Image 1: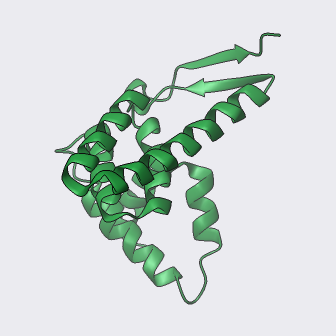
Image 2: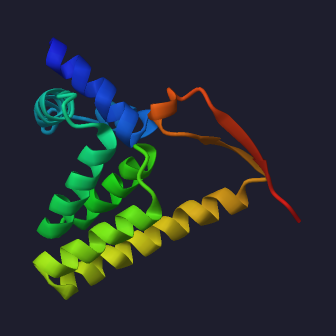
Length: 152
């Protein structure tokens, strides 16, 4: 592949998670592989690869735009990416408020429903694990891990 694709693949994995991206690419077929490759190069290599805007800010911008468009599957995916890129739940909530102001309350309600479901899934996953590792966003270079034990 080309340099832009490789750069995009690295950015995409860092934001959406290696497992998700590798699974998506492994299941790409004759129909959608060209799109996956082009999107990885263009969106992630060219767009996300421009280091003028940091990942956290870019995630916040994406949530605003994707939420405004009403693309809830992508919005939920990018909520996960935003958390990985250092956004807090409170910051995402504030983004939903802005979506409500500029796009209307019904769209903000839809974003809030998806955010609540996303957060519930994350919380339930964490509680269900006896121990798990919490990885801090890459501003810490993925070197800091905290072992959390379930308290009974």
